[in-house]
Image (cartoon, rainbow, N blue to C red; front, top):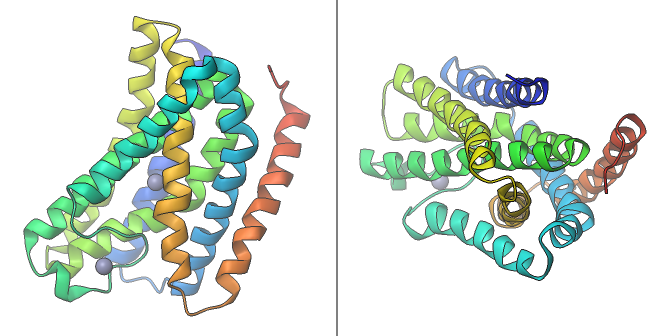
Length: 254
Ligand SMILES: [Zn+2]
Ligand SMILES: [Zn+2]
C-alpha cells in the first residue's frame, strides 16, 4: 500500500471511531448534554460552510473547469435524494420524536439515509486528500466535528424505535464502516481513471454544502439556546485558524 493510501485510511478510521464513540455514549447512557451536541453541530456547520465557499468551490472549478458546478450540484442532490426524498424522518442530534419512530421501518430508513451520508463523508475526505492533502485535512476536520453527534443520532434513533441496545450500538458501528467504504471507494475510482479524482473532489464540494447547509444549519436553527447560531461564526473563525495551521505545515499545491 502506498504511504498516502495508508495515511488516508488512518484518518478514515479516526472519523469512524468518533462515530462509534457517539453511539456508545447513547447506548451506555452516559450523560451527553444537548448543549455539547449543539455546540459541535454549530462549529461544524460554520467550519464546513467556510470550507465550501473559500476552498472547495474555487478549487473544484480550478480542477474541473466549467463542468465543476454540475458535479457540485450532483453531490448536493445525491445526499438530498438519499436523506430526504426516500427517507421520511432524518435530522441530526438526539432523536426525541418517539412518536414518529414507532415503526421499526422508520428507523431502518433513517439508518439507510445516514449510511449513505456517512459513505459520502468518507468519500469527501478521501477525494479531498487525494486531490490536495492539505484541503483533505480540512475536510477531515469538518467531518470529524460532526461525527460524534452523528453516531449519537443513529443510536438514539434505534433506541427510540425500541431496538435493543446492542442493535443500536451495531448501527453506529455500521455507519462507521460506511465512512470507511467511502474512503476506499475513491481509491477504486482513482485506479480506474486518474482524472476521476478532480471530478470526485468537485462532487465532494456539493456533498459538503449539503452537510453544512441542509443537515446541520436547520438543526441549529431549532435550538432554543441563542448562543448556538452565534457559534456558527465561531466555526468559520475556527476554519480560518485551521487553514492557517494546515498551510503552515503543508505546501498548498494550487
Ligand atoms: Zn426526530
Ligand atoms: Zn456526516
